[in-house]
Length: 107
Length: 120
Image 1 (cartoon, chains in turn purple, red):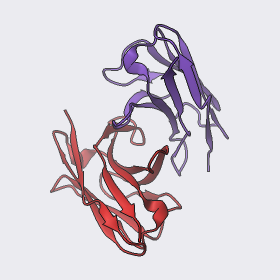
Image 2 (cartoon, helix red, strand yellow):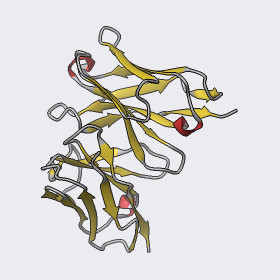
Image 3 (cartoon, rainbow over the protein chains, first blue to last red):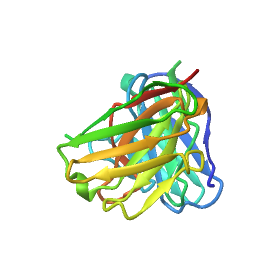
């Protein structure tokens, strides 16, 4: 199975800051990587797929990059509604696997 | 906007069975792959199972293989998950998830989830 490792587990930031979240795969997943956002008490929402393509309706302050085994999700000028848990997911191989998540909390 | 509504969750004892359903509307269900993803209380996301649009291709996580069965009825725009031999570790919110139109295995549309609790 491909293990997805996200870091850090928790990130304390202030509104307006730029945030970088990391996701590492235990083997290459090419660009078959998606990012999801989950706010407290809500369902996950697709943010990014194919490593860097924003999903419909996702603001431009969210951007993804990387390929192979190293990926990042950047959030420019963090807004109050961006405080949430972020998950990466690989869809290169079965079984599909998620990272453990990074919680972005208010500093 | 796509609507996915799960039902069938509840409290069951270890070893018992449960059938989850997902009713869909406002999208062409028969052309999308569908999935079940679960989330244990306070934990992360775990993929459970996927089924292609025609039901030709079906996949399961090892943790549920042999115990869970995914199926769909395109005429009824519905997805199902038959769960047998339930264990305490199956306790989770189960989400019905629609695949992305261009990338089947990207989870684009999520239901609100249904809670399954396995406890004696």
